[in-house]
Image (cartoon, one colour):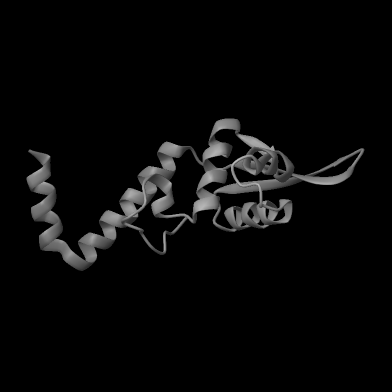
Length: 121
C-alpha cells in the first residue's frame, strides 16, 4: 500500500487511510477474516446510517490497496465473499513509516537527519 497522503491531525492508521477503511482494518486485524455482512454488523452499532453496500465497496477498495484479499464461497444463501487480511498491523505500520521516512529523506534530507539524530539521544 502506497500512502498518498498523511493527515497530521489524525492518530494511528487514520492518518493514512480514510476513517471507515481504518475502522474496517482494525476489525479485520482482530478477526482475521470476515464477510462484508459481518463487518457491517460490527459497524452499524457505531454508524447506524451506514449501508451494507458501503461496507462492501470499502472492503473492495481495501482489496485494491492489497490490504485485504477475497475469495468466493457458495452456500445456501448463494455466493458470498470472504475477506482476509494480507498483512499484520505491525507490518503495515512498518511499511508506512518506511515510506514516510523515505519521502522525508528524498525531500528534506538535512532536516530529517538533524531531527532523527536529535530524538535518537
